[in-house]
Length: 242
Image (cartoon, rainbow, N blue to C red; front, side, top):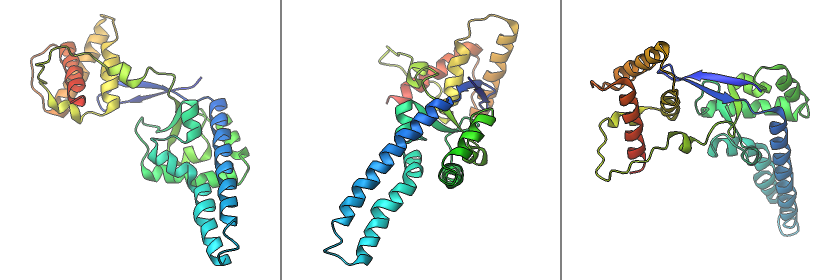
């Protein structure tokens, strides 16, 4: 199983497991069933109006309610469902930028445009060949757009990873600047704190990460490095639940 490692701006490495080919295939089959079922139902609905309307009106309805949804299904769902079509959601996989970020609209558009080439134009053969030959199981659209498809069920649930109970009802955050960090930065900090090793290398690495965070967020504190990172997570948990 391929693993892709990305670094946050604070040099914290995060690992993501690439979605295996069989999951992508099953997600694609689920989507195909959904798309064709919808198109068939809407086609029958539109055709019932052909006796009461001109062929011009029927053709417009056919394009609006059958053709366009059929063509735009993957683009719309991935844009508005955080990188997931219904099939991907069912299989627990999602599209992600190869640098660990949410893909941009431009990246989603590129993936969708090249779907016409590697999925529809070649009946999926180009996509299957590309996925089989690339390190991160990328179809042509992924290679062009700079995206990967990850298995969300590999890592712990994000909320479970960063969740930290705060029992003090009078808790006051010390570093509200923590909200300027991305989700993957916060996740990376938690992963770093989970390392139990007391080696000199780990301590030095933790100190370097801490100094970098202080510099970027313009924070001045004499807290111990690990204590500072732990407090950042507490502040983040408190502020995101307000």
